Picture: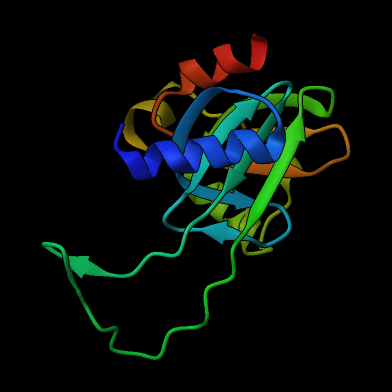
Length: 152
């Protein structure tokens, strides 16, 4: 791990006063409060709480910054968390359906669980349902590692 990444991890552990026991990058994030992050979020666990946050992305090609064609809206950082005590259930759903929830076009109650054909041919996201009704969607690189982190 390079020095910048280690300094970032150290800062997070200091902020939360606990060691990071698990971490990953979710390539897409959304929730049922009409928020989504196309470039994903950093998802990690400290103690019995999962935290996530996004970062500003500047378009680049081969390390060279590109100027966007249209004026871009100012970046607004998004952070959130949930504890294991707040966790209701999790299940896989089709990303396209989850996107409709983030746009306010569909209710989470209407989302069917992914079937075998969905898992083979479509993009999947993990739907995390909290006991208070809040729903988070994470497009995870390793769903099984997330399931293990939820149990540990």
